[in-house]
Length: 336
Image (cartoon, rainbow, N blue to C red; front, side, top):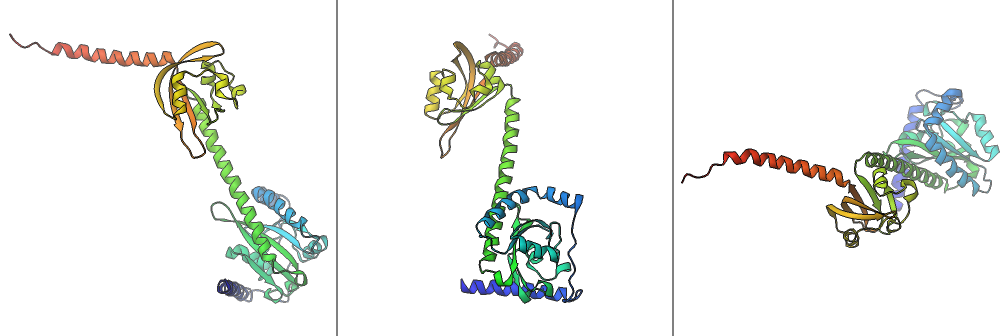
């Protein structure tokens, strides 16, 4: 662990040294230039593009700040270009940083503010701490900045979380805190993305099932109805909306053959059965598909309308008869 920490420290020192080398070529340490600031429609557009990061990040920062007991520090959310999107923290610290130009919409690029964790974390894609004389610009030397990048579910840089305070108020745990918040934000972004993708697939599946000519029913191991399309509801004389979430045994009387198949998690293929629903007998040709999972078995039932299946069978038999009628005359009896 000690060797790994030393290697990490050397890597960070190398990053800072390289940044100093770049900055020394085109800026003076003594002069301070206020960062450029995106305002109005431009800043609003940036924030709309980062709605997910802001929604999750602001909640995480507010939770962290609540347990800091008014510590003199500030917490920033920045996008991938090191533009400050949101700030929270102790009012006096925020005011001191604002006097330097660190406001909502300010671009903390290395080409403007010199060597600083706010820009280096985004550039290097790793947690960075700069404090005191590690900053190239003398105006930042009284300050300590810790910043950790946030990545999206594709591994792309999405933004960063930063903690800023005066050097005399810094803590050895500051960088770890930004790392923990950034990971929480990243995990929440991933969860939201996966949930949205899952919902898209679910909506596509429901659209497909609703457009089928066959009736479709699905229920879990407890028999709770999870899906019922319009065709199945019409065939079984049920209310599609009111039936959702109810036990299938309370809605219809299942035929014995189907009950046995469900009990043994055995599939059925185009079997003709009779249901009893709403005091009416309903004939149907069914196909049962068990879904066997570790959490329990679930089932999908297709209800094929009997008349359509009979018409299909009649059509197929007609084709067979027509073929035989053409073949029989060609068969000659052997000569006596």
